[in-house]
Length: 37
Length: 164
Image (tube, rainbow over all chains, first blue to last red; front, side, top):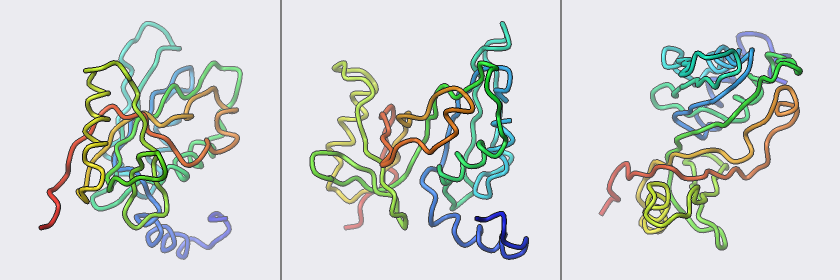
């Protein structure tokens, strides 16, 4: 849904919604395989 | 690719994203991507999943997610018999579970401290593995792992003392 919104509004939307919807402050993702990074 | 997908997230501090390949013995060794939120922000795991999905990682390469460890800050509460971490200004909560039941283990001690702190109103930081976040690409990415999310606790600390 986000991808259909014009760029300027997209940026504003993410700014406003980001901290309210987030859950974690740090992370470590462990991956494997040829496309791991 | 996973590293780039994480870096694209608005709430991630781009300079914090570091990829490490601890064992350089072969292309299928495990590697880690560490990341942290911008100051005052939090990272949305739904958006993280969506961003990795958007890379269209292909199957048949033995690539995949081994595990996801996170640190979340919030307040502890009870939901029925479960210990949960409530995230401020968010409708999301994490169910907390012991990752190691062996008495005296670091993980068991951390979980026990969390249980004892519940009800104090203190802000706490909980670290642990997110249950269900593992599997090969692209199957692991085809749908969001189950919710509410469970953190298998490996670390715990109080962030600040409760207000008098």
